[in-house]
Image 1: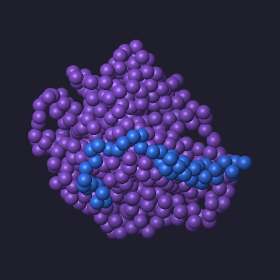
Image 2: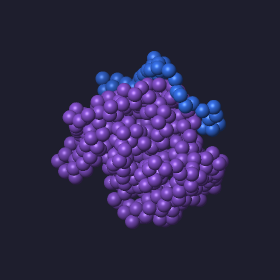
Image 3: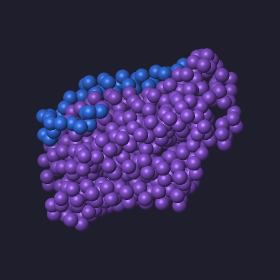
Length: 47
Length: 497
């Protein structure tokens, strides 16, 4: 039982959190419209 | 969350020194590269002109919030307590996922619409702070906490230089501050964000490599768990901690929405809709780094069952010692670089936020309110202020290095409790008022201090949790008793699109 809890927390939990992030990000839609000040160039995108 | 850094020397090994120096040259080079862009204006200098790429924002937001506490503190905690240390990382990872998805897009849209560069800018517009009192209060709170916070990072860097390269702590502090100063003062937000991204790569590389190699060398997971179980059954029990400690661990995440050096990253993204992508990348990075740190601690316990085997009998020395014993010297240099990466990626972001409080909130919007100032002048002033703040932080770090450790802990809790609940309510509840926010700021700060200094309270739970909750209640209560801004509907519209 203790070993099950150990593996659940140190191996499964991180996968669950990452999967949740992906599911929430995919599910979420913009509230309305789009950004009004998006610039043309993006210097940070050079990275 | 500060650390006694590794008593493990590398000064004699040319591979390790070479890897480390290459890393420093890369970081400074990025500062030089970003100079021209950051000189265009204060928006460019402090939030990258709100033109940052989603990947850069994801990694920068994540590592700005992770100091060497993750690499040295969490590894040491997992070494000492086993997998229950995991709960210390779950809280902030979940909190930051929610921030990326729900909080950050609203803050970013509002900031873009009303040209907000700093968090006080956001509060001032949101609550029609015409006299500038709310802005001034916020600037003072941010400035005071951040100078101490930066000082703490410099002292951490100084100790790392001292332990790793045999320099004196004073020289180490000066060297850390000098490196951060060069690339921050030249390249501003762009340099800080791009270097953060590089530093995030160093950190994740080291935190994946070290546990994988050490566990494989040990013979695999089953042998590791068997050895831990034989040492102490609690070392394989993830629930071997008290309720108060558990809540306190998870409550660490309450600090994230109140730390402006993290929030500034959200405000800098080019397209707020891309924050969903940043949420996934940021969470993956957070998870891999955090669990890597926990695995390092667990593997380290199998290799060094007795804490006396660690330099100074200090669990925070485990990470570099384990790396030194199991990695090629060049990779050990990378591990050392990852410690500096954690320190510098936090210090640089905090430095910019503190400087923005002086230049934007005090000078431009306070002293010269209503005037149009030349951008070139503001950028020059920003560079002078960054330099001054570095000098101040170095002074604080050298004069009061023990006090600095307290300030680091207190800053995360104080900023989290003061700015967290107030900013959440300001973003999600139309009924929030200026008076409510001011009351919440005072409550969050005061409760943090009182809780910290009353041993009976402090021993029960990390002060951030009660301070955050009380500030939330007080902000709500005072807001109910006062009138919200008449244009709250219009302001909320700006958060939605």
